[in-house]
Structures are given as structure tokens and as C-alpha cells.
Image 1 (tube, helix red, strand yellow):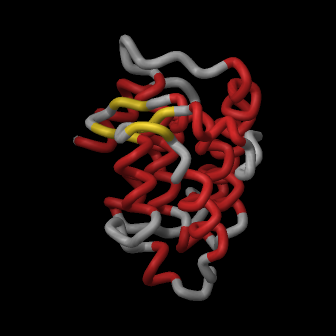
Image 2 (cartoon, helix red, strand yellow):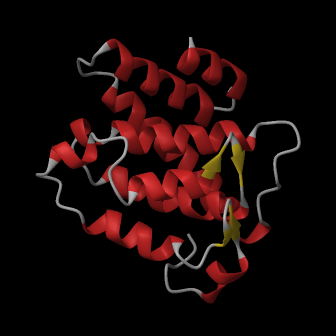
Image 3 (tube, one colour):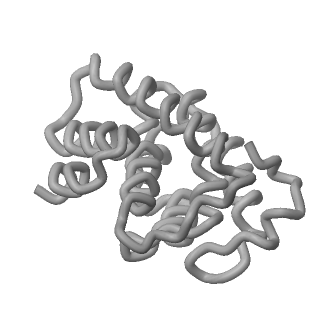
Length: 161
């Protein structure tokens, strides 16, 4: 996993240019208290909204998206299930975008961590699916699961259907 202090972030790109801001956004997200579940369940809360906008823009993903995904998985893994939906949606959207025709390639130096994080995300989602959720949350979870398992088109159908 690319260290948040690595200068490599300045050479990676996201939707708005160099990804030098991503480590701070990820660190901010990591430090948010888990007992404030209202925050974790708000689709427009910061820094999640900024991360989502930068990492997945109109279904496009970027080199920084791949580097950030392992950090998002670690963050979500350390949250109680009720706090995971929004982050898992972002993880699923990165995985979907990576499977789009013409998607930017995964940088070789982050590929192993990215692929490992996808497997970990699948386990986290499967654990979440054991709980009771609203229909919309089930759609997010199921979509994210099939996306991280390599079925991006099906994930889109589930999420948008």
C-alpha cells in the first residue's frame, strides 16, 4: 500500500489534477470518530464527498483512485458495519470504473495492493450482508460486491436498477 507520506502521490493524478491532496483527505477520513455514525452515513459529508469526486468522476477512474482504494478498504474495515455503506459504495465505484473499456491502467507500483484490497473488500461486504439493511443499502452492498469481484457491468445494473 502506498504510504500516505510518499512523494509518489504528487505524480499520481485524479479527476482534477495532481493527487497531492488525497493523502490528507484519506488521513482526515481515517481519524473521524466511528461513534458519529451520522457522518459516515451522509453521502455529501467531507472528506468523503471530495474523495468520491476526485477518485471517480463520471465513471472515470485515475491512477490515484487505484492507490487510494487500499486505504479506503483499511478505513472501512476499522468501522462498525453501519458506518461502511458510503465508503463501500466508493470502493465499488472505483472497481466498476477500472473495468470500463478504456479505463486508465493500474500503475504497476500499486497494483498488488489494489488487487489485495479488492479481495479484502469482498470479505467486508460479505460480513455486512449478514445484517439487515434497507433496500437501497442492499443495492449498494450487492453492487460493490460484484464490482470488486470483477463484474462491473452487473454492478452498474444493480446500483442503477
